[in-house]
Image (cartoon, rainbow, N blue to C red; front, side, top):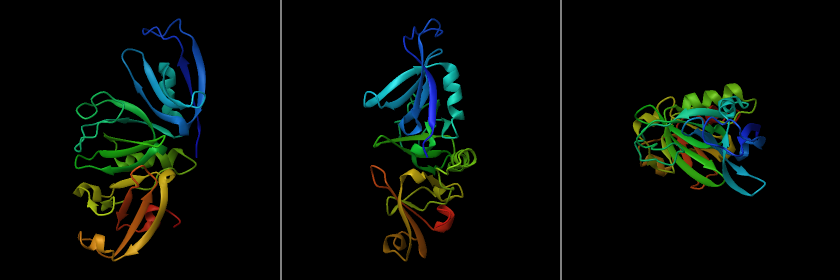
Length: 235
């Protein structure tokens, strides 16, 4: 599922036009790519896990390398942060909870994204065992399309109406729309079909329910009345 990501790292950044700097071509696995974003002027940054030092670090890269990142085998895509209705503020863009900014994410790290009342997405993003929460303007359907049309290996499921997240906590009404939710197959722990579960009946949903367990730091459980064969093709 992983692909190679290549960029030109600026070694001795002079902070201006990036002229007269030493450049080093660096290649990493997409598994080690956290996210990338713009700074002031021509400064562009990538955050990633560096195998050589055994820790995460930030690299300054050229503008050309930054622009090329979203063409990396469909693994990476640029998203726009938005005002979040649930106070999520962990995105790498300054003031993400109150302002708009763009950054590049690895769609394989999107554990789950679900529709908000405003038509954007709340995202749970998992990298290197740590969970990040932020809101973006892309819908779950848009994110799923990015993954399925550009990748030979399907990394995200289809968008489906989501009724529950984390057992019986009901999401807002918009989350049950056609573009309600997606999750990454990278984080799929198990999935099954359960009928007439008391947890869901008490919350007003009866009949057969699809349950999806995700391998995330908070061990998310998703539930939907959509058939599991739609959510996980070939089930």
